[in-house]
Image (cartoon, rainbow, N blue to C red; front, top):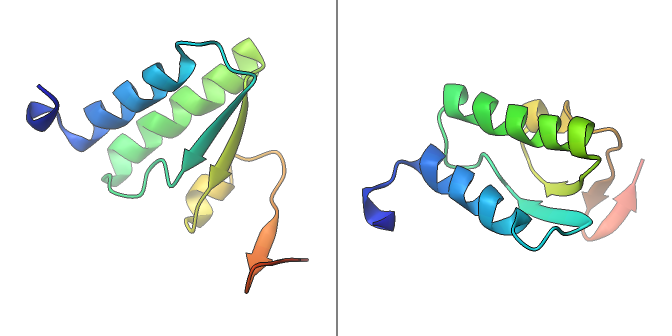
Length: 84
């Protein structure tokens, strides 16, 4: 049952569900937003592994600099506009 899963387990299920149809891009909005640091690290390892081994592209929206560090490219927005 979903309500019996931990936050990390729910995030892993969300990643698995996103991959079922073999997308070329996975959209991830704050994928570690409600997780503790150890679980966040685990989720980021899964994302990094899928990117490196399977060539899967992730478009990640985050406010967390630790999450941004795993990204190959970072686009910053301010007031709805792209900024350098």
